[in-house]
Image (cartoon, rainbow, N blue to C red; front, side):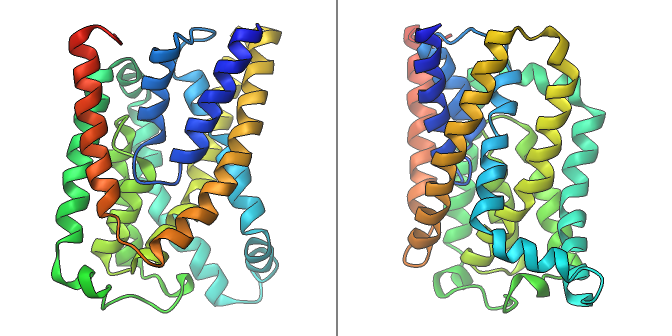
Length: 274
């Protein structure tokens, strides 16, 4: 049990650091669990539930903004528009997730797919960052998140469907989608943070409810422990990412994804992971 606790804390660190970076937390968790021989429960139960910590981190980090936008829901059309855009951007991936849930869960057992998705996503980030308008900043960007248009929200939502493939990255797809839709890097990133609330929150609740009767008390303890630690690490990652993108592009993450995918393929070919 102690060995599993140490592994859970390490995996929570991986989840916390990678959840809001465009590098795929799920992909890193799958590979990390394989390297650590973490078999306390079958995927994707742990990989999905631990994300509740990331949701809690967003709620805590943006608690004032969320409180203001919740209190003003009835009185402010701008606030209603904001939450409507969040719902619009969440709808495509939610629909696909419900329709193809069994097929999607089978993908959690494939490290080869994770490696390929990491490399593909890395190339996509590098291509987007090479577009002239992103070298100078997005020219069509609204001033704040309350001005995101339905077209922008819909494009972000459609690209987020790709994140159902482990290794593609929910935050990566939503950030790239936001940039392609005309948001600057910071707004695309913050919009991605808010999207985590309904998407990760609903996926976690669904997986917890549908698997609760199959989990032992020890497994429940590991899930709660993992979620708690991932919440702390996620909160730190949000702050660091916002500071990073205020001065840098996402190019480094693109190269990192390609290198990580190549290393995973090497580890698979040598039998280090299976």
